[in-house]
Image (cartoon, rainbow, N blue to C red; front, side):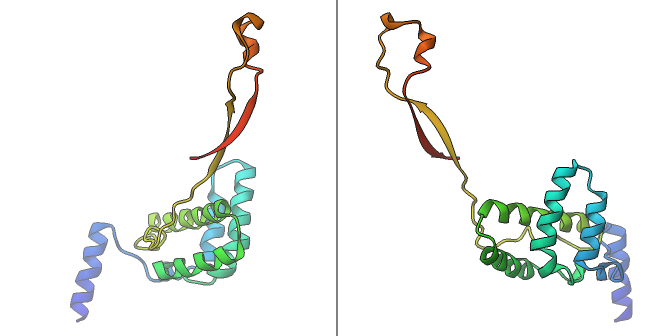
Length: 161
């Protein structure tokens, strides 16, 4: 039995898939803080991501060891996030921040795969855009140059992106 375990560990190491159990005990909070410190982006974006993680991810996921994450943990957290945050876009940005942290953990070999990638009941985020549409043309060409027609009646309609 010990020989089989050792063979599997050596095979994982040879494939580059070995996860060090000691390193995988790092909590999500510790790893997220490390990830944020290394984040290369402008200060405003960094502050926004840090706020999303601090207020909506770390209270729920912060004490969990990074190597123990399963899709069910993410689904449960996402359900709690839906109850706490009304904006679908803000929830999506928060989910993306958590997913980015876990992607980095996969790259650093602390986690075998990102549990955010496996999502049951995936909901598509539909954003609405407001587009100005010019109303019916009522000017005759004799009333002035064409560029004045651009000042004509306007209406706003919402189109799904």
